[in-house]
Length: 98
Image 1 (cartoon, one colour):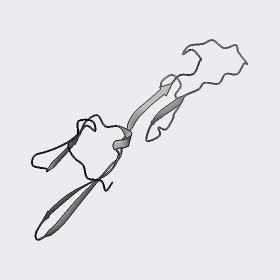
Image 2: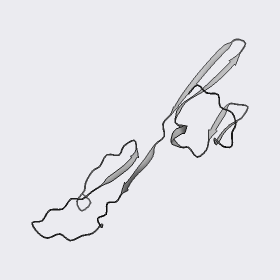
Image 3: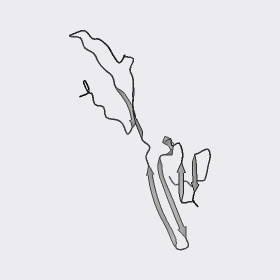
Image 4: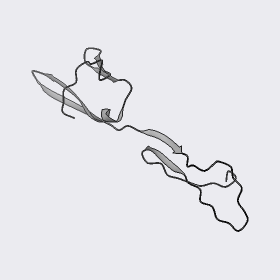
């Protein structure tokens, strides 16, 4: 994002192979952004940018309701499926696996 990167143990970023490789360990959301490699010599400058978007697999946080329950005939019930993830997951309900 326009800021020079130096080798740093605290940021988990390491530059190696003579500067041609940038390794970022243990990625976190603040690490997302645009990374640009700038190569220059007396003949000019070249740029290559990489846009890094962090993704998180879906997870479901349970409600206070148990996973198995009995309900009286002609009664109503509401089942809750709170999901998290990046990008935001879509939710689909299945009955008996289908």
